[in-house]
Structure formats: structure tokens, C-alpha cells
Image (cartoon, rainbow, N blue to C red; front, top):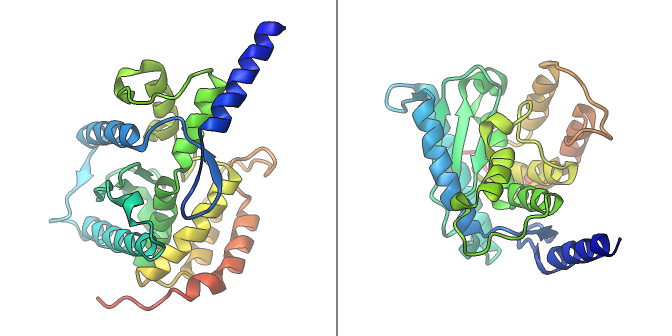
Length: 269
């Protein structure tokens, strides 16, 4: 019993010390791993993923060129948003990269440091650049808002692991295992990286703003998520799911739309 109390006390102490306040969302988050370690490991994993999958060349594919074009516009919008908030330094280590990968999966993801992949299977659902921008805004928000770092830290606490600190993440096998459980494409469920409902709501919120700032009409988000809902698949109770229900997400997006539209100026091609 005493040992249990000591362990519990140690976990509470770690959690208390390791909490940081996100500069943009204002929410307190658990952070046991340094961003530099995460980005270094993410870059290694990203390169390996690209080497093992069929990357569609932007020089020969209009779809791949579109992914890069939309992605770069979203990245520029995010950089501006952070700069306007006096938080430009938060993204100074980001080296944006956008790739289209040939896969039937309806998916897209962003690793720390701005390494993004879109699967060809997503494009028939997005249908247009604006809807793709909504997806990329959502996925990149997860990265810049530290959502997956937060989830990784939570899993480390659950497994009794302390922060990696200055030790290279790639050389810490237990921490690397947690990284792969959170970030690896094979760990993803359904369309988007599973995050808490709070994180999903934040990604929807800021994703709409970033898409609008990039010159894309955020109102297309409603139609996109309706098409996603129509994809079907097993429905899980919202109380057990890490994602909001389709109905709740769409209703929340409609409430967020007036704010997002304040940032919208149509893109000039």
C-alpha cells in the first residue's frame, strides 16, 4: 500500500511539473517529451514511411501538385496566425513537407515538424481544394497544438515512464514504442488520428480558421463531414469514442462558422 502511495505521489508530481500552457489554445497540457526530440524522431519515421510507400510525384500528377499547393497555403496561413499572436517562435523549427501517397485509405496526417501525408483515397471525398484545405487545417492543428505530444505524455504516465528529457527519443525504446503507438500511420483508426474529443474540437476550430486564412471557404467543411459520415463504418457511442459523433461535429462546426468566415478572403489563383 505504501509503495502504491509513493508511486501515485510520484506520478502526480511529474504531471504537475510537466504541464505547460498552449500559447494559442490557452489550455494546460501534459508534456513529458521535448518538441526537438519529437521532431527528430518524426523526421526519421516520415522518411522511412515515404521509402516504403508509393509517393505520387507532383511533377506528373495534378492531384499531388494540388496537395502541395493547398498544403503550402495552409502552412503560410498558420505561420501568419502565430506571428500575429506574437508566437512565431513556436513554429520556427517547422520544415513543411506535403506528399500524396497512393493508397485507398481515406486518410491524412501530420507529424511534428510539419511532415504531412495525404492518401489518394481521401481525394474522392474531399472533391475540391477547399475541402482538402479543411482536412489539412484540421490535421496540422493537431501537430502545432501539441495534441499528439499530449497523448504520448499521457501514455507515458500510464506506463510509468518519466520524461525523455535530453535523451534522444529514438534511443529510448520504451518511449519510442509509445511514439509509434501515437504517431505511426498503422496506429491510426478510421479517417483521422484518434484524439480526445476536446482535441478534435480544437482541431476543427482552428482548422477552419487556417483554411479561411489561406483563402478557402470554410463553409465546405459541413459538406465534407457529411460525406465522411456517409462513408459508413461501425458507429461507436460518443461516450466511448475519441471522436465527437458525426452529428455533434457538424453541429459544432456550424456554430464555429461565423468566426471562421471573419478570416476568409477568397484565394486568387
